[in-house]
Length: 261
Image (cartoon, rainbow, N blue to C red; front, side, top):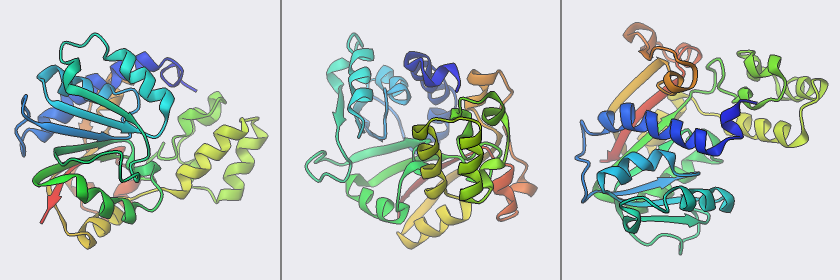
């Protein structure tokens, strides 16, 4: 397990760095981001992705089902100059009383791959999007080298071993047990295997739910890896990106902006 998974302020700062440098410029090609923009982040955690939006002065709502992370978020933003424009909610997004407004921008980065029944979710979340609103999603395709989030393992070998998360579930769990991983880690990584998503499945769902793609970018080297591992960010080549299914093995993250047709 890496330090960032324990030091939540470090993780918060890394999220803020990537969103400010890469995500907001990507989004700003299709929507203006200013002090009048209403932003919702689903699965916001400690709110690191929201800091650059808060710095701009956007009206912000962050929601996460884990109350502990929301408490951290409130603490991290307590002295922010735009604190009065920021609201954090500890609740399930499916609680219809949790949020009763619509947004110019819905934001989700590294969350969709954790959600059960993504078809249901992408249908449900429309209620929070203004007719002219945009929806940013960033997620790693399941088959990429670390698409199983195995970097969460305590074993140094397993945390750095690529592709083994693709093994059948009994073998996958068995390997983790042999290496002495905690039950909570095994269950968490098994759940991610259950909720895995690919580019093809994502596009099939949004087509069915009458979304359109406004912008797409597929990365060979994830923008997160710049701040985490000091690697140079690289987009995947257009040739490889155009090959269905195979591309999932070589793309470490996808950026999409979608909207309602």
